[in-house]
Length: 152
Image (cartoon, rainbow, N blue to C red):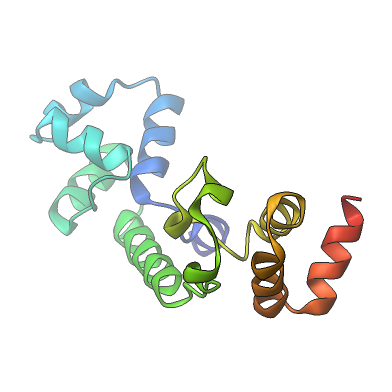
C-alpha cells in the first residue's frame, strides 16, 4: 500500500474511488446504495467536491476488499496538499497588473509557479512597462529573460 500511496498522494480519494469503480464496472449509484449511502454523496466525493469521512471510507474499503484506512490516508494527504497550496500562494502585486491582461482567467486563481512560462510570455507580449517590471521583480531577471527569449 505504501508504494501506491506515494504515487498518488495529494490526489483526492474520490478520484481514486471513481477509477476503482470504473475498473470494476460498478455504477456509482448502485454502489452507493450497496453501502447504504446516498448516491448524491458518493457522486460529490468522486468529483472531489466533498471529503471522504471515516465511516464511509471503512464501508467502501470493506465492500471493495481494499486495505483498511486506504481512503482516509489519501484524504489526509489531499488535505495536506491543499493546505500547502494555500500557504504557498505567492503572487506578484496585483495592483501593478491590469486584469485585462489575464482576460481569460481569474487572476487570483493563477498558479504563478506552475504557469510562469505562460504568464511571462503573456506579459511580455501584451503588457506595458510597469507590468513587465513587476514580472521581472516577481520571477527575477534571470528567469524572466530566459523564458522571454525562449518564445522570441
